[in-house]
Length: 262
Image 1 (spheres, rainbow, N blue to C red):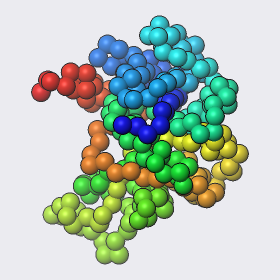
Image 2 (image 1 turned 180 degrees about the vertical axis):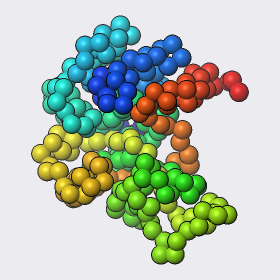
Image 3 (image 1 turned 90 degrees about the vertical axis):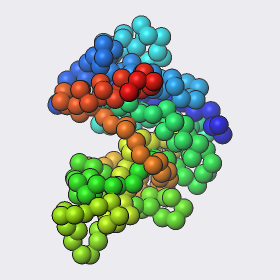
């Protein structure tokens, strides 16, 4: 059970350089954003809000009886969009908020509940996120897969697109099995926030590390914020970045929507 009630905010914008209009793109006949809402509704969240800058997304959500907050189109990140919702609605500083990106329609509900539970039990953490073990050398080496290292309390030390922790001796791709990889973890891009910290986030200056890696969570670490990293054994959660991702997501969503199949 969740120790404290929590809210899910789903930031969703229409514009995308690689996939314009993707929140409304149909996946198995249903707009992507409504699949994401369905995952949120499967969780124990007590409130779900879609934060968007587009009336087309807002209309589709309202027709499905989803709470919508219109937000500024100029926000550079989903975190900034979520923070606007918190400010406009006057949420108390102790509220727990999970940001679920609108283009992540296959996120398991138990991941959302775990995030909220972890943050609720750790008052020293400003945020919480998740990771899973790396079992493939290709994932360990890929700059498109974000890695994370953390301390003995599960608090993040660093996030990187590089292969961390780096082994001094190079790992050969030939005959490399999971047991030969260093203990390494892939970051799962979900975040839980304490509302008070979220409201202060916009005032933090962008740092060089964030700019180099293009990872906004490094801004939090640079300015002394603490991010707890919870572990899951595996996760099929993935975003939709390009139209080529659609068939993979449709197959995954078919299993989520009809778990007795296959």
